[in-house]
Image (tube, rainbow, N blue to C red; front, side, top):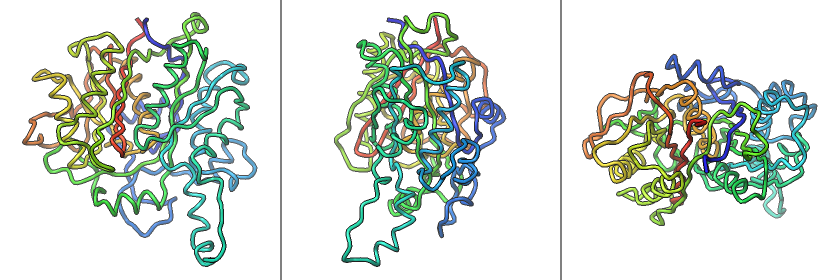
Length: 393
C-alpha cells in the first residue's frame, strides 16, 4: 500500500498561527522561545508560549464563553479550524473521526481553583476539565464531530500515537476520514513538575550538544486530516503516513534506557511497516529534547538502526520548545513541510557533538532530496513512537 493520504493540516504554536508562518520561521531560523507572559508563574525560565490570552483566542474563534474552555481546547479548535478552512467544506462530512492526543489536558482549569479547594479540606471536589477527554470533547463539539471521538494520553508520544491509530483505522476500513494530532498548553503543573525533575534549561535548549542541560517547555496544537485512497483521489495530497511503530522501554518512569531500546524497536517497526530499508530515509526529525538522558539514548538508537550512515537529522524543539502531547503532531507538520519544500530544518543552538556518539545534526537550513522523513516522539513511561511520512508518489 502507498500509505494513508494526508490531505490537510493545521497548526498553532509560539512560531505562529498558520502553516505559512511556521514555514517562514523554520526557514529564517527564528525560534519562539521567550519568558512567560500569559502563564502566571514565579519560575522565570524560557518557554515557548503562544502570546494570545484565552479571551483573545476565544474572540478569534467566536466563542462567547472562554472560561468554559480549557486552553488546550482553544488551541486545538484553532488548529482544526485551519483544516476546515483549507478543505473547501462548510463543515466536516458525516463520519469524520477525531483522535486527539494530550499530556495534561485541562489541568490549567484545575489550577484556577487549587488554593480555594485546598482550603476546604473536608470537601471533595471534581473538576471535569482535568480529564484529558474533556478537552477532546470540547474540540469535537465545536465542529459537531459525532462519529468516533477518542483521546490518547501517552505523555510526549500522544499525538504521534493518535496519527498511528488514525492510519490503522483507515487501513482496516473502519474509517474513511479522520482528524489526528494533539494539543497541550503551558501550565504551572508541568512547569513545576519538570523543574522538580531538574531537566529544564535556564537558557535556550541545545539538542544533541555535548553541553546540553535540559529542555524548554512549549505549547501548541497540530492536526492532520487523514483520508482513505477512495475518497481523496481528486484532492491535493500533501504526503502519506507510510509507516509507524510503537514500543516501550519498560525501563523507568521518566528516563529512556541507556541503549535506546524502545526507540530502536519503534524505528525498526516503522521501517518494516513502510517496507523500506534504513538507507531510504532522507531526513530524521528527531525527538531531541535537549536533556542529557534523551539525546544520548536517542543517538544510540539511531546508530543501532543506521550504523555509521545516520541520515541528516535535527531536532526542531529549538524552535517550539517541547510541546508534550502535541509534539508528534507539530513535528509531523514540519516533516510534511520538509517533504513539500525539499528542505532540512536546522537544529538550533548546537555547537559540539556528544562525545559518546559523535553525531552532529544539521545546523543550517539546507535544500536536499526529502522523500521520506522519520519522525520520533518518545514519552515518559518509555512509550516510544516513530512515524515515517513520505512523498505522494
